[in-house]
Length: 260
Image 1 (tube, rainbow, N blue to C red):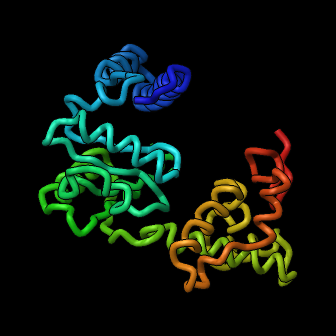
Image 2: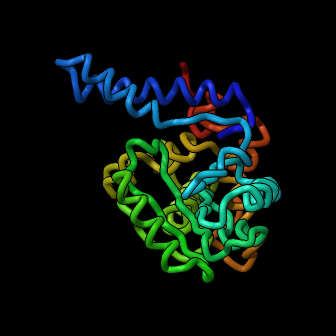
């Protein structure tokens, strides 16, 4: 579901291409079986530009829109009125409070967080977040659903960044501070963490990959809510690059320069 028909068309095309690659891999010697697999899966997917209609028969609704509390509140308030009482709600937010998102609904016991990681088809982890009102039935249903789609599910409280981003965001921020202080070059910082800690990608490469503006947005949001925590202090160098439009890979330059 998306309010933009253009976005839906792109999503449909992306799903078809992804399924085509999977089918080709699974049935490389039998194209007919591959096509049958793709057609079967696509027959179970429906697209809609009307969120209220899209949730009318849903057992579970997973929201994955922009990281803006006001916009999420507006969406969930309207969905809460349209969805059946049985419908479970979940947010895929990576940085906002699940309890605060859920506060505009009348189904706090049927609300939780389901945080996926990009690229979703490849990354096995799913963070399942409970708020204090989340019922055992809701929690168990979300865990079971996550496992049914092949994810490894972990449980986390409704804490800033949950598990992964609570560790990852301050880690990346400290790497930026090291660069800002002149402790080491960007390349040496990344090489150190890849060869010394076994990470597949260095922290500054990761920042460029996810978007420097994303990192600034998350840190500033956490710092505003938890100003006493030094781990959440925004980094001036990263803010400067964002102001200059150097957001990482998506703009061709961040901590590194990229050529297409």
